[in-house]
Image 1 (cartoon, rainbow, N blue to C red):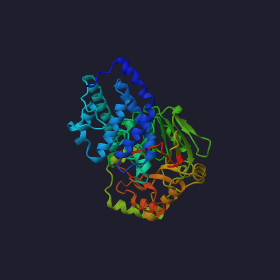
Image 2 (tube, helix red, strand yellow; image 1 turned 135 degrees about the vertical axis):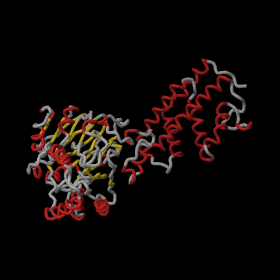
Image 3 (cartoon, helix red, strand yellow; image 1 turned 90 degrees about the vertical axis):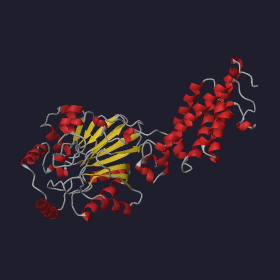
Image 4 (tube, helix red, strand yellow; image 1 turned 90 degrees about the horizontal axis):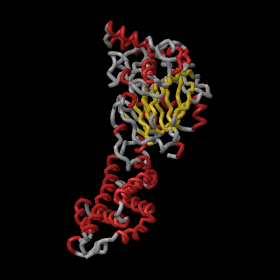
Length: 479
């Protein structure tokens, strides 16, 4: 019979833990290599290895008196058994082996031929349960993963990088964080939600950025699932230009959230006529030296240009839509007039009132936001010549009705910003005269982009459907 381990004897064996960190690295790598679905990608494993070690360190603290060699032997056996048969089928054998008795009554090199004492049995059983808990949790996390990064379709490294993390509800729920939804668990997860027209919500490392503010669009439009009054939290609001369908709810949301509102002079002039504290308004020109700094990110305003659809095309299409669409009711006309009054129709919007924003997160991930599908300006070209490429472009589809004209501008934007991922904006909008039936087709644009750049990732989601990115993996870092 195996004898009980005395306290003094156990203390003498504590030295076995001397190399625990390196030992766990080897064990964890081996387990991951064997259980990965595609035989996996070590760069991705390394980016999350410290998190696995942290979990195993926690197991060690909870076990206290269990020797590390027991965990190592158990981990090796689990891998060996999984290679031959299913883990569940062999579990009784593994438990008997590591609790001190030979499986099936026979001796084994890895198993004690004699039954363990009661105390030793309980210690080893605890080791078995704790180790299985960690390994099972790792396997479950790999299967569930926190979210699917859209760049994973072209990069195994990005696809597998977060496989050790649990499912993140913030990357699956449609509730805006600004309206009470959950923040992403990982500070290096960017959550992006499109909220109709050119509205986006960006959430990163505890910060909420709203791009444009046009939520209460009127009864002619399909519901967004969120109203301006639902928005309770925001740190920064970036307004691309001052037309009503980009800023009509900016003042009310800004006053409630205390967010800083940023826009061109023609936009902020209109804001100053509305109930919003002046100190929350910041005017920019987009001509340089206007960097906005917030915790964990910076924003560079860049002068863009508003879209200018060909009038000979839009005039014909508008007349056709007028003939087939029912006229608005008197109530809808009144509703529309109220909403339109909160924006500007100044011609200055075209060449001095449209601002693109280059957002750079603290880990180097870059986002380019442009809320109108106009021509690329020299200011935009200069900015992109300086930074090279962006990870994500959020760009409005032009209002030219005809696909060849829309494709031409979409390709101009793609060539200028060189994004890894592009998401469209303004594609659910009426083109010129407020007709709600005419959406702008995105598939012809995506096809044209992929024809020129097969590696570009195009993403178009439903209202409020989240898209999440692992921002540690970005263009600046070579991904």
